[in-house]
Length: 448
Image 1 (cartoon, rainbow, N blue to C red):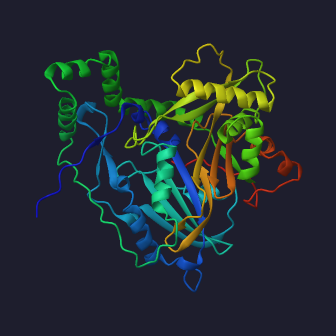
Image 2: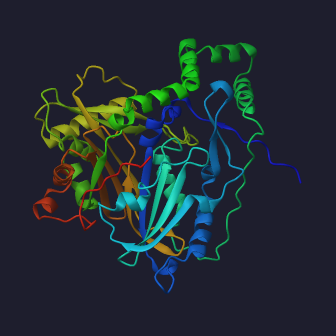
Image 3: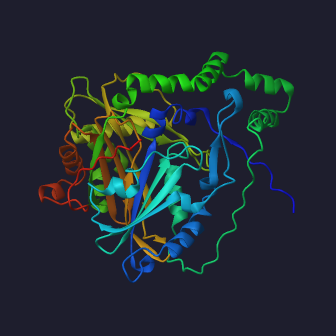
């Protein structure tokens, strides 16, 4: 039987910034929690049926071949690192179980997602999952994934591949996973890069032009940075930079009905995303320069960028001082439309950058992890922990679930209340409670 071909997928230069230091690597952990029916996967004694869960997880993982890949560095940093198959992949090493029932709340959701553990090891695929028994009789499937693996849109495609639109019986046929093999030596990576460059052009002149299209100064700086990584890490340890760059953060969670929020957005002449971003702008104190929020904008159009793990850019949305909600919605909509059309927004004076906000739809109908129906989805986004506020909204079924993250010294509860009031003022006035009872603050900081 012949060996499978060597598989090498070079990381994009822009994606490399997510791993170029231990600080960036730790900050770019993202998480998700899927709350699902526990009955199909709990034993009679209330513990998790590990073999049954692992069997279903293996079936789900086979639908995400990228989760079998790890990073391999190029010799002397000649190219970006490459994604290659992990010859020692073992599913069990990516999974932990907790049979002690726990209340799922904003105070515990980060723990359930796995953020109480050490950062993801960089010598194997950059993800892990944790199954936890909840006091409600449900099971929480918590997961961490590194942002280098993919952006938010790609990450949501993983959740869709992990799940099915109807219950999947335990004896369902598994898909056949086809992977190549890792190169015997990292020296194959620059050779592969050179071959791909030649294949992409019809002539030697075309290859020459493509190589010199990017400034040599940038190439040299990137090469030097890769080879000086040890010096950078020494400086980080010597100066205590990690503590300053990765302050402790906490979060708040709430749910609102999506249909009423969509109607409110339409009344303000904007989309649900416009409204969420505008609400994030109003979550913090105003500034005499105005307030700015970063908004991820996807560049996937049709099949363009469909294979790219990360294919977004950050747009800086701006609200003038003392703007009301309607004005902020209009400003966000105008700026994002300009960027999508390829127009410049240089005529807008920047305000105080306070964080970022985004919204991702998951599914209009319930989805299933094997035989278990998924009841709720919570996202723990990656981002700059020094930000004043980060807001992530997820639409699942008829519910908009919102995660609000802030630095520990700031009042995340008050921020979450302002965001909720902007999205659904009637609910806020009625004193609507979070769907995560038992407290609404949590420390999301990873432990090194």
